[in-house]
Image (cartoon, rainbow, N blue to C red; front, side, top):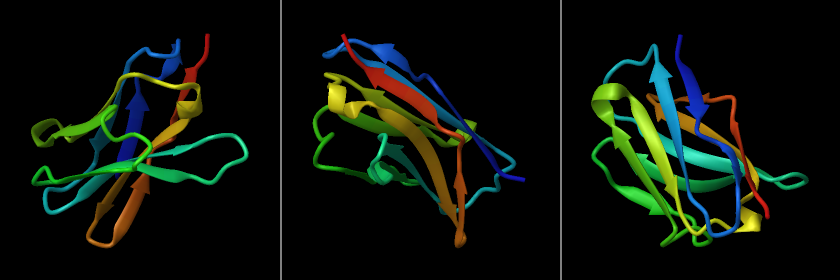
Length: 115
């Protein structure tokens, strides 16, 4: 059974930084894509960043230059380094894994950017 567990969320002041982690267990090796999504109160869940197993990345325009997605395939872990955080980055951040037509989601971690 595949499980994704996010960690690293919290409260940070505007301009601050956070690093999110998502550890996957019960997975099998092979081509896959890992992504970070976020959902703010009253809004739809939106894609933040994606990384393939080979390291190709995609970023939403709203986070380009501020967020960096990376992964450690040996540890089945994906990271999201966030800098220059803004109040509008406040949301629950979710990790997602796409593999062989299956989609798996983590439970989410809250990120709050506020002074």
